[in-house]
Length: 147
Image 1 (cartoon, rainbow, N blue to C red):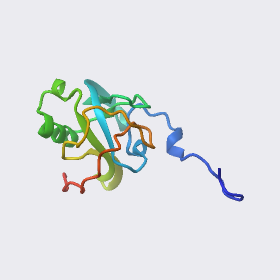
Image 2 (cartoon, one colour; image 1 turned 90 degrees about the vertical axis):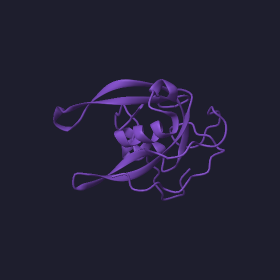
Image 3 (cartoon, rainbow, N blue to C red; image 1 turned 135 degrees about the horizontal axis):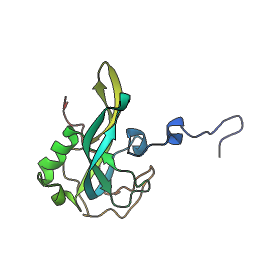
């Protein structure tokens, strides 16, 4: 409950109709999740440009929204669990919000930590934010620039 004189309103980004996970959904925190499935998808970008991306769904996600995986995140997951996306099912990854260059702009994005998360192989605990997260993981240092 806000104090007298304070206004408590939801962030505007929480009101947008989005079908994929965005950095905002992580609530500024590392979130460890278990991969449920990876399927091929087609995204439509600015100007109607279409691109194919793997869509990664997570067990226990409150949003049910997938993360559209870019090459950087695919390479990180493949480095931990192999190139076969069927082999990623049931594996845990830690997502974190950061920024990247997109043309001349800095934009928010989600990256996958370049380490296998410690702890259980399934996500049972939940934490603040829009995804369920394991409480037994400590954030690792930021990985190096991935270009």
